[in-house]
Amino acid sequence: MDRRSFLKTSALGGASAAATGLAAPAVAQGAPRTLTMVCSWPRGLAGVWDAVERFVDNVQTMSGGSLVIDARAAGELVGGLEVFDAVTAGQADMYHAADYYFTGQHPAWAYYTTAPFGMTAPEMMSWYYGMGGKDLHQQLGDVFGLHTSIAGQTGAQGGGWFRKEIKSVADFQGLKFRMPGLGGEVVGKLGASVQVMAAGEIYQALSSGALDGTEWVGPWSDEKLGLQEVCQFFYPAGFHEPGSALSVNTNLEVFDSLSPAEQRILDVAAAECHQFDYALFIANNGPALGRLISGGTQIKEFSDDVWDAYGAASKEVLDQYMDDEIFAETRAAYESAMGEISGWTGRSDSVYTAQRNRVLGLL
Image (cartoon, rainbow, N blue to C red; front, top):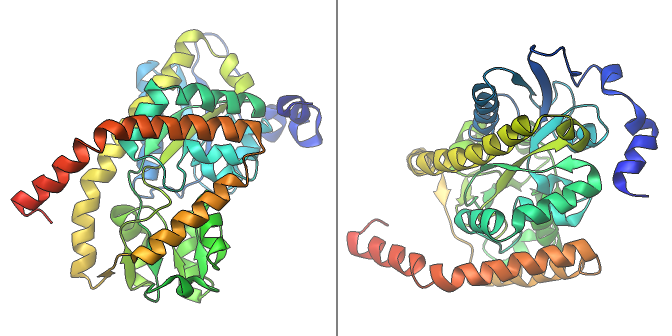
């Protein structure tokens, strides 16, 4: 039995949207149709909630008000990590989240956010829109009854915030660290006690000692979350999220009930939101990093030994899923595209930026 059939016949999946009160039914012709979107983010959280608001505004503006998105923050209807189940069960119409939160459903979801030692944001956009990534995303979505779209981009994420400096691989032993997705599995292989929690829980967990460190996004969003108040050391470069996409995924039956024009609006709104959000993060991260440094945050880099350990553990984590046909196909396509893209950018963009920064003294 495929995933959609299971959800339709199970007790959870059989619950109607009308019965839950979470998903609005179709309304009379001429009246606006409202779709409920559950989100993994607290309301107002820098960058990620901006992406939510941009998507909502895009849809309403492009539809002339005939299609309305009712965005609900984490905890308002369901928890931030429960949005996938709510949408696949038909209890909400769509979600905005990072798909790598749902690797427990299938490990291939990671590739539509990011993967260890994976693609930068421009590489991700090239693969997704120009090299078949979007089609693979939808093939995975079909298994779970979802229409898929990326709709946000954080750019490269920091390696993490730590209460103590990471001087060697040994410092990961017993470290209580928050990191979702396949990256979390990698850090676990280095000896860390890995935890996954929604953004709204991170600050308190660090304050109480329930966490010794965390990754979140980057300087701008991290500053707004207050991580500099509870951690002294920040590592700007990390292995785990070199370019993280966010997603708006819609219950497939809901999506199929929309007109072709409305379907197109959702897809275009998501694509523009992805571009907008990337620009927003890049524009804000540099100034935020300057404020963090001025405020006393200590900026560090992982040693080569730590980077090598990340690399070896990443290969172990990815290899363990290769018996799964979908994962193997996705990984092969992703890594092939990354190699083709970097064959040019590694000899053009990377060399240019390194030389530009040296000549102009930008770093």
